[in-house]
Length: 349
Image (cartoon, rainbow, N blue to C red):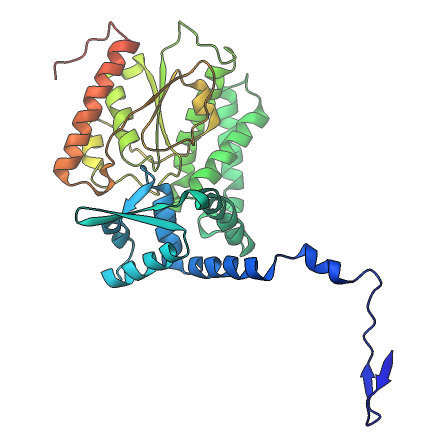
Protein backbone atom coordinates (compact mmCIF):
# COMPACT_ATOMS: atom_id res chain seq x y z
CA UNK A 1 0.00 0.00 0.00
CA UNK A 2 1.38 3.47 -0.87
CA UNK A 3 0.58 7.16 -0.52
CA UNK A 4 2.07 10.22 -2.27
CA UNK A 5 4.05 13.25 -1.12
CA UNK A 6 3.55 16.84 -2.34
CA UNK A 7 5.46 16.07 -5.53
CA UNK A 8 3.26 13.12 -6.34
CA UNK A 9 5.98 10.51 -5.68
CA UNK A 10 4.82 7.23 -4.19
CA UNK A 11 5.78 6.51 -0.58
CA UNK A 12 5.23 3.32 1.40
CA UNK A 13 2.39 3.58 3.83
CA UNK A 14 3.22 2.19 7.27
CA UNK A 15 0.29 0.33 8.74
CA UNK A 16 0.51 -0.40 12.48
CA UNK A 17 -0.65 -3.78 13.65
CA UNK A 18 -3.61 -3.35 16.00
CA UNK A 19 -1.69 -5.41 18.56
CA UNK A 20 1.22 -2.97 18.57
CA UNK A 21 1.28 -0.03 20.86
CA UNK A 22 3.04 1.69 23.73
CA UNK A 23 2.83 -1.47 25.84
CA UNK A 24 5.65 -2.94 23.70
CA UNK A 25 8.11 -0.79 25.61
CA UNK A 26 7.11 -2.53 28.82
CA UNK A 27 8.70 -5.73 27.51
CA UNK A 28 12.10 -4.15 26.86
CA UNK A 29 14.76 -3.20 29.37
CA UNK A 30 14.51 0.46 30.38
CA UNK A 31 16.73 2.96 28.60
CA UNK A 32 18.58 3.98 31.76
CA UNK A 33 19.10 0.37 32.86
CA UNK A 34 20.28 -0.55 29.36
CA UNK A 35 22.89 2.18 29.56
CA UNK A 36 24.24 0.87 32.86
CA UNK A 37 24.34 -2.72 31.62
CA UNK A 38 25.96 -1.70 28.34
CA UNK A 39 28.70 0.20 30.18
CA UNK A 40 29.47 -2.89 32.27
CA UNK A 41 29.47 -5.17 29.22
CA UNK A 42 31.77 -2.73 27.43
CA UNK A 43 34.19 -2.95 30.35
CA UNK A 44 34.12 -6.75 30.14
CA UNK A 45 34.48 -6.85 26.35
CA UNK A 46 38.28 -7.00 26.34
CA UNK A 47 40.21 -10.29 26.23
CA UNK A 48 42.80 -9.42 28.87
CA UNK A 49 40.16 -8.15 31.28
CA UNK A 50 38.18 -11.36 30.86
CA UNK A 51 41.30 -13.40 31.60
CA UNK A 52 42.02 -11.31 34.70
CA UNK A 53 38.42 -11.70 35.81
CA UNK A 54 38.53 -15.47 35.39
CA UNK A 55 41.81 -15.61 37.33
CA UNK A 56 40.32 -13.69 40.26
CA UNK A 57 37.07 -15.69 40.16
CA UNK A 58 38.87 -19.04 40.32
CA UNK A 59 41.60 -18.04 42.79
CA UNK A 60 41.65 -20.45 45.77
CA UNK A 61 41.10 -17.68 48.31
CA UNK A 62 38.64 -15.78 46.12
CA UNK A 63 41.12 -12.95 45.60
CA UNK A 64 44.27 -12.31 43.61
CA UNK A 65 47.27 -10.04 44.01
CA UNK A 66 48.09 -7.58 41.24
CA UNK A 67 51.53 -9.20 41.07
CA UNK A 68 49.90 -12.51 40.07
CA UNK A 69 47.59 -10.85 37.56
CA UNK A 70 50.61 -9.25 35.88
CA UNK A 71 51.87 -12.77 35.10
CA UNK A 72 48.97 -13.32 32.67
CA UNK A 73 50.49 -11.16 29.95
CA UNK A 74 53.58 -9.40 28.73
CA UNK A 75 52.03 -5.93 28.86
CA UNK A 76 53.44 -3.29 31.15
CA UNK A 77 52.40 -2.82 34.77
CA UNK A 78 50.60 0.49 34.00
CA UNK A 79 48.52 -1.33 31.36
CA UNK A 80 47.59 -4.02 33.86
CA UNK A 81 46.61 -1.33 36.37
CA UNK A 82 44.50 0.42 33.73
CA UNK A 83 42.48 -2.72 32.94
CA UNK A 84 41.93 -3.44 36.62
CA UNK A 85 40.79 0.16 37.17
CA UNK A 86 38.21 -0.20 34.39
CA UNK A 87 36.76 -3.30 36.08
CA UNK A 88 36.84 -1.57 39.45
CA UNK A 89 35.16 1.58 38.14
CA UNK A 90 32.10 -0.37 36.89
CA UNK A 91 31.85 -2.14 40.24
CA UNK A 92 32.84 -5.67 39.15
CA UNK A 93 36.07 -5.74 41.18
CA UNK A 94 36.88 -4.45 44.64
CA UNK A 95 40.45 -3.77 45.74
CA UNK A 96 42.37 -3.59 49.00
CA UNK A 97 45.96 -2.55 49.58
CA UNK A 98 47.97 -4.70 51.97
CA UNK A 99 51.49 -3.53 52.44
CA UNK A 100 53.20 -3.27 49.05
CA UNK A 101 50.56 -5.02 46.95
CA UNK A 102 46.92 -4.47 46.01
CA UNK A 103 44.52 -7.43 46.14
CA UNK A 104 41.40 -7.81 43.99
CA UNK A 105 38.20 -9.80 44.45
CA UNK A 106 34.80 -10.02 42.74
CA UNK A 107 32.30 -7.73 44.48
CA UNK A 108 29.52 -9.70 46.21
CA UNK A 109 26.77 -8.36 43.96
CA UNK A 110 28.54 -9.60 40.83
CA UNK A 111 29.63 -13.08 41.99
CA UNK A 112 26.62 -14.90 40.56
CA UNK A 113 26.74 -12.92 37.29
CA UNK A 114 30.47 -13.55 36.79
CA UNK A 115 29.96 -17.24 37.52
CA UNK A 116 27.28 -17.38 34.83
CA UNK A 117 29.51 -15.48 32.40
CA UNK A 118 32.48 -17.82 32.84
CA UNK A 119 30.69 -21.13 33.29
CA UNK A 120 27.70 -20.79 30.96
CA UNK A 121 28.01 -17.87 28.54
CA UNK A 122 31.68 -18.36 27.65
CA UNK A 123 31.33 -22.08 26.72
CA UNK A 124 28.16 -21.29 24.74
CA UNK A 125 29.97 -18.54 22.82
CA UNK A 126 32.81 -20.91 21.95
CA UNK A 127 30.42 -23.66 20.91
CA UNK A 128 28.52 -21.26 18.66
CA UNK A 129 31.74 -20.56 16.74
CA UNK A 130 32.12 -24.25 15.90
CA UNK A 131 34.08 -27.15 17.40
CA UNK A 132 36.47 -26.08 20.11
CA UNK A 133 40.11 -26.71 19.09
CA UNK A 134 40.64 -28.99 22.08
CA UNK A 135 37.58 -31.05 21.21
CA UNK A 136 38.34 -31.75 17.56
CA UNK A 137 39.23 -35.26 16.56
CA UNK A 138 36.46 -37.00 18.50
CA UNK A 139 34.96 -38.44 15.33
CA UNK A 140 38.35 -39.87 14.36
CA UNK A 141 38.60 -41.43 17.82
CA UNK A 142 35.18 -43.09 17.71
CA UNK A 143 36.46 -46.50 16.69
CA UNK A 144 39.26 -46.40 19.27
CA UNK A 145 36.82 -45.38 22.02
CA UNK A 146 34.46 -48.17 21.05
CA UNK A 147 37.29 -50.70 21.25
CA UNK A 148 38.38 -49.35 24.63
CA UNK A 149 34.80 -49.52 25.94
CA UNK A 150 34.43 -53.12 24.76
CA UNK A 151 37.66 -54.05 26.54
CA UNK A 152 36.64 -52.34 29.78
CA UNK A 153 33.10 -53.75 29.65
CA UNK A 154 34.50 -57.28 29.97
CA UNK A 155 36.18 -56.23 33.22
CA UNK A 156 32.95 -54.69 34.58
CA UNK A 157 30.07 -56.92 33.48
CA UNK A 158 27.88 -55.72 36.37
CA UNK A 159 27.90 -52.14 35.13
CA UNK A 160 26.53 -52.80 31.66
CA UNK A 161 28.07 -52.04 28.28
CA UNK A 162 26.09 -48.81 27.87
CA UNK A 163 27.36 -47.42 31.18
CA UNK A 164 30.93 -48.32 30.28
CA UNK A 165 30.68 -46.74 26.83
CA UNK A 166 29.16 -43.50 28.15
CA UNK A 167 31.84 -43.33 30.87
CA UNK A 168 34.61 -43.79 28.31
CA UNK A 169 33.20 -41.09 26.01
CA UNK A 170 32.54 -38.68 28.88
CA UNK A 171 36.09 -39.24 30.13
CA UNK A 172 37.53 -38.49 26.69
CA UNK A 173 35.49 -35.31 26.29
CA UNK A 174 36.29 -34.07 29.81
CA UNK A 175 40.04 -34.55 29.33
CA UNK A 176 39.94 -33.07 25.82
CA UNK A 177 38.80 -29.71 27.21
CA UNK A 178 42.21 -29.10 28.76
CA UNK A 179 44.38 -31.51 26.77
CA UNK A 180 47.89 -30.21 26.17
CA UNK A 181 49.00 -33.04 23.87
CA UNK A 182 45.99 -34.43 21.94
CA UNK A 183 48.05 -37.41 20.81
CA UNK A 184 48.04 -38.70 24.41
CA UNK A 185 44.29 -38.34 24.87
CA UNK A 186 43.38 -41.98 24.30
CA UNK A 187 46.01 -43.19 26.75
CA UNK A 188 44.86 -40.72 29.41
CA UNK A 189 41.24 -41.58 28.67
CA UNK A 190 41.89 -45.24 29.38
CA UNK A 191 43.53 -44.45 32.73
CA UNK A 192 40.80 -41.99 33.74
CA UNK A 193 37.96 -44.27 32.59
CA UNK A 194 39.44 -47.22 34.50
CA UNK A 195 39.46 -45.12 37.67
CA UNK A 196 35.90 -43.96 37.14
CA UNK A 197 34.59 -47.45 36.40
CA UNK A 198 36.35 -48.80 39.49
CA UNK A 199 34.65 -46.06 41.52
CA UNK A 200 31.25 -46.89 40.01
CA UNK A 201 31.73 -50.59 40.69
CA UNK A 202 32.85 -49.87 44.26
CA UNK A 203 29.87 -47.68 45.03
CA UNK A 204 27.16 -49.74 43.29
CA UNK A 205 26.95 -52.75 45.66
CA UNK A 206 27.07 -50.72 48.87
CA UNK A 207 24.50 -48.11 47.84
CA UNK A 208 26.59 -45.34 49.32
CA UNK A 209 27.13 -47.20 52.62
CA UNK A 210 30.74 -47.87 53.55
CA UNK A 211 31.87 -51.48 53.27
CA UNK A 212 33.96 -52.18 56.41
CA UNK A 213 35.93 -54.85 54.53
CA UNK A 214 36.96 -52.52 51.71
CA UNK A 215 40.10 -50.41 51.74
CA UNK A 216 39.24 -46.81 52.69
CA UNK A 217 39.09 -44.45 49.72
CA UNK A 218 40.30 -40.84 49.86
CA UNK A 219 39.61 -38.10 47.31
CA UNK A 220 41.76 -34.96 47.19
CA UNK A 221 40.23 -31.99 45.38
CA UNK A 222 41.81 -28.63 44.49
CA UNK A 223 41.21 -26.17 41.66
CA UNK A 224 43.63 -27.29 38.94
CA UNK A 225 44.62 -30.79 40.14
CA UNK A 226 48.11 -29.76 39.13
CA UNK A 227 49.87 -29.38 42.47
CA UNK A 228 48.50 -29.81 46.00
CA UNK A 229 46.00 -32.58 45.34
CA UNK A 230 48.51 -34.47 43.18
CA UNK A 231 51.16 -34.26 45.90
CA UNK A 232 48.76 -35.37 48.62
CA UNK A 233 47.59 -38.36 46.56
CA UNK A 234 51.18 -39.35 45.77
CA UNK A 235 52.09 -39.22 49.47
CA UNK A 236 49.17 -41.51 50.35
CA UNK A 237 50.22 -44.02 47.68
CA UNK A 238 53.84 -43.79 48.80
CA UNK A 239 53.05 -44.58 52.44
CA UNK A 240 49.95 -46.78 52.20
CA UNK A 241 50.25 -48.60 48.88
CA UNK A 242 47.09 -50.64 48.25
CA UNK A 243 45.94 -50.27 51.87
CA UNK A 244 44.18 -47.05 50.81
CA UNK A 245 42.52 -46.23 47.48
CA UNK A 246 43.32 -42.65 46.56
CA UNK A 247 42.03 -40.29 43.89
CA UNK A 248 42.70 -36.63 43.03
CA UNK A 249 40.71 -34.20 40.91
CA UNK A 250 40.30 -30.52 40.07
CA UNK A 251 37.25 -28.28 39.88
CA UNK A 252 38.90 -26.62 36.86
CA UNK A 253 41.70 -28.99 35.82
CA UNK A 254 44.82 -27.54 34.24
CA UNK A 255 46.42 -28.77 31.03
CA UNK A 256 49.36 -30.26 32.88
CA UNK A 257 50.93 -30.74 36.31
CA UNK A 258 52.94 -27.74 37.56
CA UNK A 259 56.62 -28.10 36.52
CA UNK A 260 57.77 -27.27 40.05
CA UNK A 261 55.74 -30.19 41.43
CA UNK A 262 56.92 -32.84 38.96
CA UNK A 263 60.28 -33.54 40.70
CA UNK A 264 58.47 -34.04 44.01
CA UNK A 265 56.00 -36.45 42.40
CA UNK A 266 58.81 -38.33 40.66
CA UNK A 267 60.62 -38.73 43.99
CA UNK A 268 57.46 -40.32 45.39
CA UNK A 269 57.19 -42.73 42.46
CA UNK A 270 54.07 -41.16 40.96
CA UNK A 271 53.13 -42.79 37.64
CA UNK A 272 52.92 -40.01 35.03
CA UNK A 273 50.29 -37.89 36.82
CA UNK A 274 47.85 -35.80 34.83
CA UNK A 275 45.08 -33.36 35.89
CA UNK A 276 41.59 -34.87 36.02
CA UNK A 277 38.17 -33.23 36.37
CA UNK A 278 36.05 -33.76 39.46
CA UNK A 279 33.25 -36.31 38.93
CA UNK A 280 30.26 -37.27 41.04
CA UNK A 281 31.24 -40.94 40.93
CA UNK A 282 34.59 -40.15 42.55
CA UNK A 283 32.81 -38.34 45.38
CA UNK A 284 30.25 -41.11 45.85
CA UNK A 285 32.97 -43.78 46.02
CA UNK A 286 35.09 -41.86 48.54
CA UNK A 287 34.99 -42.35 52.28
CA UNK A 288 36.97 -39.16 52.92
CA UNK A 289 36.87 -36.05 50.70
CA UNK A 290 39.61 -33.50 51.31
CA UNK A 291 39.37 -30.11 49.63
CA UNK A 292 42.18 -27.61 49.19
CA UNK A 293 41.07 -24.20 47.99
CA UNK A 294 38.28 -25.27 45.60
CA UNK A 295 35.40 -23.64 47.45
CA UNK A 296 31.92 -25.18 47.26
CA UNK A 297 32.25 -27.04 43.96
CA UNK A 298 32.45 -30.49 45.58
CA UNK A 299 29.07 -32.23 46.02
CA UNK A 300 28.20 -32.80 49.67
CA UNK A 301 26.78 -36.29 50.15
CA UNK A 302 25.57 -37.88 53.39
CA UNK A 303 27.81 -40.42 55.04
CA UNK A 304 31.01 -38.82 53.77
CA UNK A 305 33.78 -37.38 55.88
CA UNK A 306 34.84 -33.95 54.65
CA UNK A 307 37.96 -32.00 55.55
CA UNK A 308 39.32 -28.72 54.20
CA UNK A 309 43.10 -28.39 54.27
CA UNK A 310 44.42 -24.84 54.14
CA UNK A 311 47.60 -25.54 52.20
CA UNK A 312 49.49 -23.14 49.94
CA UNK A 313 49.36 -23.45 46.16
CA UNK A 314 52.72 -24.50 44.66
CA UNK A 315 51.88 -23.02 41.23
CA UNK A 316 53.89 -19.84 41.78
CA UNK A 317 55.94 -20.93 44.78
CA UNK A 318 59.72 -20.90 44.89
CA UNK A 319 61.57 -24.24 45.22
CA UNK A 320 61.77 -23.63 48.97
CA UNK A 321 58.05 -22.85 49.01
CA UNK A 322 57.20 -26.07 47.15
CA UNK A 323 59.32 -28.04 49.64
CA UNK A 324 57.47 -26.40 52.55
CA UNK A 325 54.10 -27.25 50.99
CA UNK A 326 55.23 -30.86 50.49
CA UNK A 327 56.34 -31.07 54.13
CA UNK A 328 53.02 -29.69 55.37
CA UNK A 329 51.11 -32.18 53.21
CA UNK A 330 53.36 -34.96 54.48
CA UNK A 331 52.43 -34.13 58.08
CA UNK A 332 48.73 -34.00 57.27
CA UNK A 333 48.79 -37.23 55.24
CA UNK A 334 50.57 -39.08 58.05
CA UNK A 335 47.89 -37.98 60.52
CA UNK A 336 45.15 -39.02 58.11
CA UNK A 337 46.67 -42.48 57.53
CA UNK A 338 47.21 -43.01 61.26
CA UNK A 339 43.46 -42.51 61.63
CA UNK A 340 42.31 -44.54 58.61
CA UNK A 341 44.71 -47.47 58.95
CA UNK A 342 46.05 -47.44 62.52
CA UNK A 343 48.13 -50.57 62.02
CA UNK A 344 50.03 -49.07 59.09
CA UNK A 345 53.75 -48.93 59.79
CA UNK A 346 54.70 -45.37 58.91
CA UNK A 347 58.42 -44.51 58.66
CA UNK A 348 59.78 -41.97 61.10
CA UNK A 349 59.75 -38.45 59.60
